[in-house]
Image (tube, rainbow, N blue to C red; front, side, top):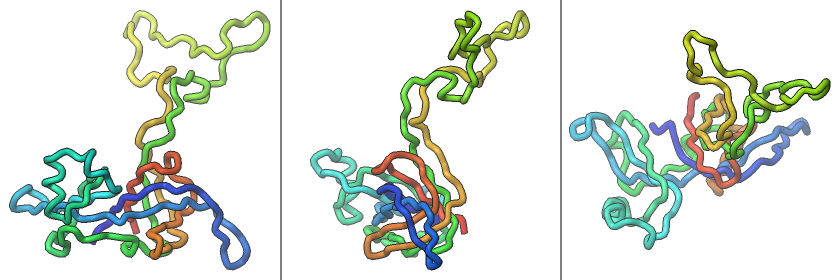
Length: 207
């Protein structure tokens, strides 16, 4: 049984329930994910399948990868990842895994790369309140003192300071599967997921 698949964020919309109420949902295009390699405990030391997602132009694929993909049908993929499974023999090379592993009401974790905000100061990045704006203050948006006096005489690791904001992997936990459209390979997840439309996502089934 596979508990993780990969998809692409399409965008957000509203899903109307039977009583007329609506919920904000994220539309996620799932797969199809193709099994490109099987890894066994005897050879690699663990049981897993490698799955590919997202078509890739054959001209932009290296020769070693082309040879790797030949055993699973020859289609090239832009993204590869492994999923641990109990029984490798239950899968075949070239097999497509789609939305049928999910059901309405399932709980999932979604991991993706957040939107990049560029270089940001402490007020935008960490929510600092800033300094006074009157009475001759010249410290409106500065971080303030970062030192520790004579002991330990250094900047402590992890200090909240200006820097790159966003563009990091974020996991949104415990999202509910509101609806499934198998004919379009689409999931509707209640709430928001990381990243912009078109972002690559990992969807892990919890329950």
